[in-house]
Image 1 (tube, rainbow, N blue to C red):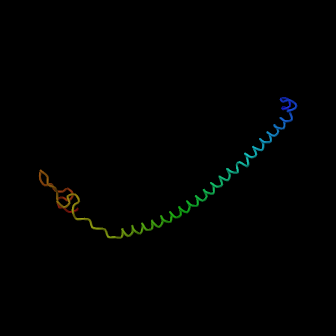
Image 2: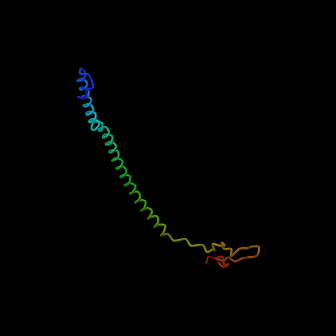
Image 3: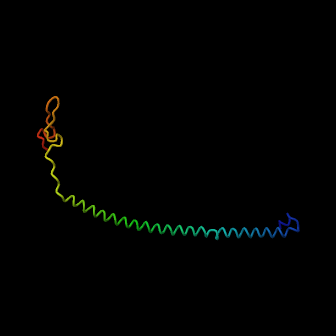
Length: 124
């Protein structure tokens, strides 16, 4: 063995046993790293996944409620719009929108007839 060549004969068996123990410890640590230590991470991930599942369910319920409210609101909006459209329209004023029924305007140079109503003061 290598340990026997490096260390004195009295300590060779002791060092060989320590090397073997270290080797076994390393294998055990590797096994623990691969399997046992990952269980905590797996549990955390499972908790997170269950939380996400609950969150998805909550969003689905919220979506369904919102969709239902939108449908109800749309129906009410259509009803209101139909009620407004079915009313008779108010009659437009007979007064000219440009001169407001004054038939024109007075300036320093004299009276100018409105170009929209041609001086009648009524809507054309």
